[in-house]
Length: 472
Image (cartoon, rainbow, N blue to C red):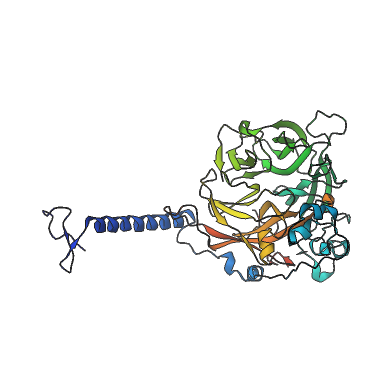
């Protein structure tokens, strides 16, 4: 279609076939051109942001990762009732058919060994046979170099460049599980934050409790009757301090605050500085993320877990600034695990179902402050129930695999509400590659998100070419 004469009325357009074309056709054509221009602009912008023109080895095509990206299926069936079931399970689901989640939560289930294998099948770095070394078995008990189960729940990992060592921090839950009151959630008294060190991300040495509970002062945030969850540690190059952020609460989860502690060394001890509500809002599940430019951010669940808040920390990482954005509003997400790949920010979150597992969601953003878009469930393999329960686990951290851009370790906790000290770790390969296959919340901007995939494997290991000391 073309305009025959510039002097003609602008609403009178002639087609090649000799007919008249309406103004609406012209407008639609113009809109199509604009959309194509936007698509071209987005593509150029995408190439520019990711080092345009230079060939990159995609991790999805890397021979050492092909095996990890094979979808591994599982076959699990709920057995018929046998013998006396747990009164707690009967009370919880009196009128429904028993599901795998019911079996998971029932401490007397016939399937208990499937979700929580016995100690004989533990990952043991000292006694492991040769063909089991450096292999991860999601859901199995994991022993440290002293032969004790690792206690680093809800935690994260810091790579310390000066010592070329990985440090794993988490909740030390080696205590008795009980209920503070009849309707209270299962809990363990605060013992402290456990710390483990490793050179290979598989053999872990217990460095001790680097932030201990307060035994006598009942007014202290860290008194054993309170709650300390999801500790994360980042290093501040300017102050040369290791800074720990954590969720601080009372037994009824009404304090809803964050706590801060600092140390001169990665293996502690950490000095507790106090707690506050960031930006004046309640804060429960949280994490901190240090960007490439050294700016650190906090992400926390707020407003009764109905939304997440995100904002930068001060330069010393000891407080929040006045800047804050609300994200994933109304989506009721918690357990945020934030990571970055080729200039794009990604996040894995969990639903809010207490100790019970639920479906993970992946999110992406061009700016860490948002807007954030939801891409869908990243879990692949297992079976449908595995994928709908994040492999019966909950996200806590995502660790980059050094030397392999686009490859990460997804770290999650398989909570055991009947005996929280026996909660397990689910570590699985996470790959960022290829287009997202879920519709986004908006599409006019044509965001070029890559798909985030978490692959289920009963047994897996890092590639043999992996260099644990390569700068991350």
